[in-house]
Length: 73
Image 1 (cartoon, rainbow, N blue to C red):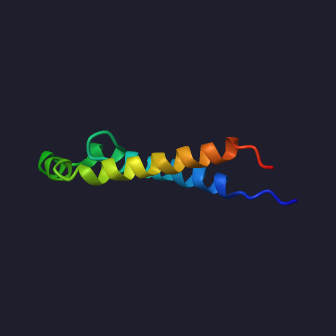
Image 2 (cartoon, rainbow, N blue to C red):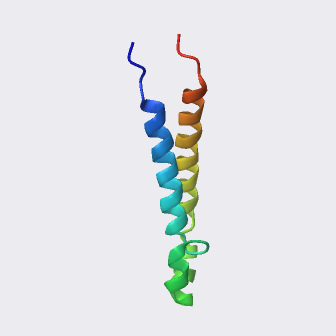
C-alpha cells in the first residue's frame, strides 16, 4: 500500500518557513547587515509578523514530525 508523504511536505514547509523568517529578520537575519538604523527601528516595530511567522513554521514542523513518528496501521 502507498504510504502518504504529507508529513514530509509539512516538515519541508516548516523548515523553509523558519529559514525565510530568520533570513528576513531585521534583528538577527542576514538582511540586518544591510539596514540603516532608521530602517531597522521601523522593522523592529513590526516584529509581530516575524514572531507569528516563526510560530506558524514551528507548528508545521512539529505537526509533520509528529505525523512521521505515528505508526501507520
